[in-house]
Image (tube, rainbow, N blue to C red; front, top):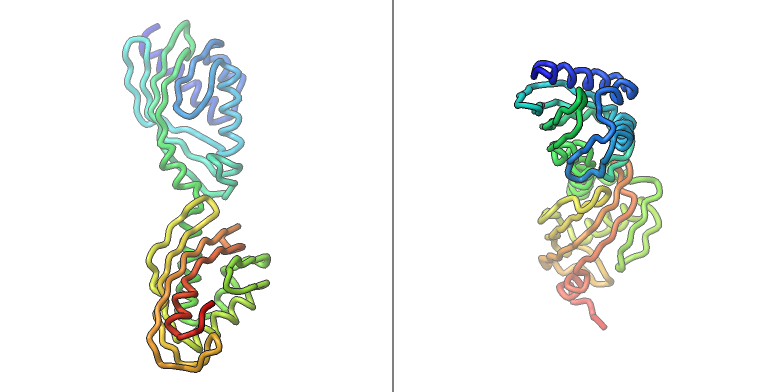
Length: 266
């Protein structure tokens, strides 16, 4: 088979891929097709067709040929893949986002069929487009900013209606109760928050480490205002759904704050 026919064969495959014509794909892929693609378990034509169906279902995948190199019975292709995030991929639920990444492939041609493939995809780049990490971190940053600027009602748009707070220092059943506690602390301690660390820890969680700096200007923990400068730290984990905070875990140095206020400790 002349090498120019290799490219024609691949172009048939790519057209069929883009039109979801699996019958045509089966005509250009060998029955004993072998695929070498890190992270995927594909062996044989039917397994490969199942993988393509999955890619169409989850990402509405389409390919654009950018470059080819031919050598003997092999064809090297560099392809731009585009689509939309329609279903769970790499553990991330559908977001509807447009996605784009590239793949470099080596195809072996035998008996007028694509018989074997080696592929390296930019899956890290794809993961970054699917991941909610950046948006989730931005939401928690907005929470910190709203608290610092005493914009309590702005928190309503950042928290979900089923918000649950897990904090050993208090029992909070709603966002309104939490806002009341924050306001009371502001009124008594006149604090500002310094953000020490903020990063995504999982597809639905963000970790925040903060330091509070304030001044004891009104009664707090049963102690009259002392005018003392105070500071304490807090490590907080936020869980988000649809870019809203629905749960939080807090471990704050409450005992350290109480000592600074001369609150008797057990």
